[in-house]
Length: 86
Image (tube, rainbow, N blue to C red; front, side, top):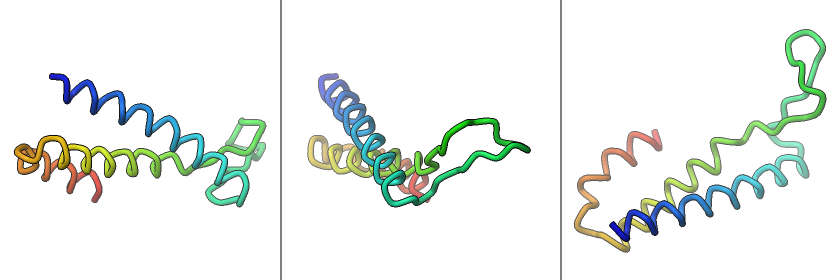
């Protein structure tokens, strides 16, 4: 049970930090930005669209944490991680 709590808290912190870093990176270098127009998009500022990248990186780091903390359950989690990455 304690491993699940550690895994959740670590993954949450990593996801929040990586999301802010990816947003700053996208805005700084102009990568993956969705610019507003008056026809369909009603937002008034540029929105970064790289939100899947922090999720993927968090899953990869979470998979590494599972391998390190509980190597006995890797066989159970392997199909989930492979399918999620694909």
